[in-house]
Amino acid sequence: MKAALKLLSLFWLGIMCIVLIFWGVNSFRDYQIMKDVENHLTADFKSMGYKGKVTVKNYDRPAGYGETMDFSYEEKIDGRLLTFSDSVDYDPTTKQYEASRLSPVPEETETGLDDSIQLEAMWQQPYVQKQFKKMKSVFKKLDDEDMTLKEISGETMEVLHQDDGQITSEMLNAGQAELVQDFQKNRQKGLPLNGYYNVDVKSYLQKHTLQLRVNYELLVDDLYDDEKAIDKYPGVFFQKLKKLDYSQFWDGYYLVGYDLKERSGSGIGGNSEVIVLDIRGGKLVRTFSAF
Image (cartoon, rainbow, N blue to C red; front, side, top):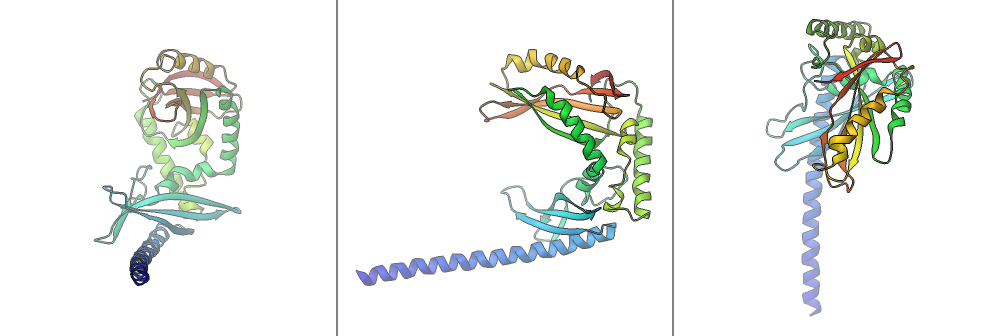
């Protein structure tokens, strides 16, 4: 009996050793692949003009979705370490990778590897972050037991808003072209983050090349059958928006809306109408629907 138990123990010990060896071999193989991709990404970023550090963080193989690698790019600017995260799609057969998303800036880099930097860099400037804090303190005043401010972010204005009537496609295209020229001039000067950081955000907001997005979250009992969310709340919410103090806000378009979330936490979905606040001289001069 003891001999049989000993044999059984040795058997399971052998199985565990095989599993550990297999896991170790696969982990080491993944590590090698990640380092190889990291080295190539570093070379790609350097060729684009970046001077910071690229680190591959994770190698993921979600079932049915191909293989992806998460990576970060870090660069120190005026004593601050800025970090941007993104991912690439990886083909283990060809050992090639490509950006998971396309570049958000017209006529900019074709690889799309630095799209998160293009999207976020200019908004990380200290004076912009300081302005975000001022905006947050104002928009937080609409928070209650059901409504919560979730995020304030900046973005390029890529399409005209359907009810605007004051901005033309020619104006939009001219503003985007000017922004690209600024990126190129910044690169020639050797400025941080490949030229995407030192941008006059306040000026481009005024020209409507850039815009700000304000997202709230509204708790409801049912995503598809909630009288308050469907009929009552939008009107009340947008009336409250009109009464806020915008005296310290920069001129520009502020896109405001909210997502619905079930109070139980079991479901998220359904967006409200997005309203554009047109702010000039610290005052709300008009509102209209977006897109």
